Amino acid sequence: MLCGLCLPHCPTYRKTGDENESPRGRIVLMRALASGALPASERLASHLSLCLGCRACERVCPSGVRYGRLIEAGRELIQTQQPISWRVRIGLGLSTRPRLLAGIGTALHLYQRSRLQHLVRASGVLRLLRVQRLESLLPTLPARLPGQAFHPAQGTRRGRVALFLGCVARVLDADTLAAAIRLLTRLGYDVVVPQNQTCCGALQREAGQPGQAQVLARQNRAAFHAADVDTVITVASGCGVVLADSDINEDTERRIRILDIHQFLADVALPDSMTLAPLPLTIAVQDPCSLRNGLRAEQAVYALLGRIPAARILPLAENHLCCGGAGAYPLRQPAMADLLRADKLAHLQQLQPALLATANLGCALHLSAGLRAQGLDIEVLHPLALFERQLRKRTA
Image (cartoon, rainbow, N blue to C red; front, side):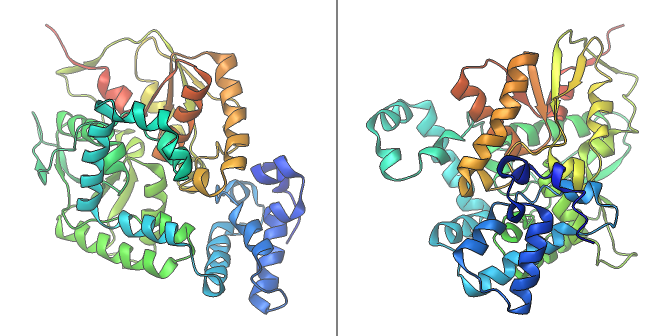
């Protein structure tokens, strides 16, 4: 239709005022690329690269245009004529090698716990190696995730689910994954961690390699079926939307439910032996685009946190706009990522919450780095980790 109703909802168009940085403009460019009217020039590639893939345009499109699929196809066309860089190839290779990632995580954990991190930052070597920004995104790394494949339910057994680990989250967000296991088992669910699961494929899609993403999707489906479960729980909404999209072509009889953990917990009551401790604090909630525009399940987060007594749950202003933490976007497009994050930091500065809850790792890393840089003392937590933190045994 090219009606342009999506333009006010596009973060990059709002910042640049450039039609080429809007969904409508990019669709025109991709059409010209596909027809051969335009070559895959660096300038055209930069317009597609600046797109966050937030899919806010899909949310408001009156014609139901699947823009997310279009931008992936456009990036694939670009990559057929412009091979990806060696840095991206290394990143994609690491995403599918969990043992290597675990080893890197252990090394980084030691790097942070020793004085080495302070010395390296002071030396300027990070700037020389052009990894200063990457290093700045690192959170305080937790201990490694427990390695067992099965975690039995506690108390009355309600069911059996599988937990998707992802790739980077195994290293950078192990605490949240461990909290998910504790919470699900305390609520009465056996938790299976399929051993042959791999990366969800989000990074491959972003890099214009949908074929490789499909290979990973098949491997994950095989791992989920082998786990003998009918529901797979995801913790990072970015992974959840990709897994859900990948499952569309699965036979109905073989299809396994892929649910964000907040969706799954929506109808799960606490056991009689459990209660939630009051938390008289203001909690700001940031809606990841993948949860809001991909899964359309952002309200499940508010429903879960709303069960915590005395907590004041507030949506962060302009939650319909991306924070800039979309996948590898802060590394690919640092200037635009910082512009978008600055708006979120300004809202947080004004609101001054005690906690910021966000359901996606990329958003958490990006926003946490910004908060640290500005000296804002606001803890960033995954909603389920906060919920699990407040869970208590009921006293007589």
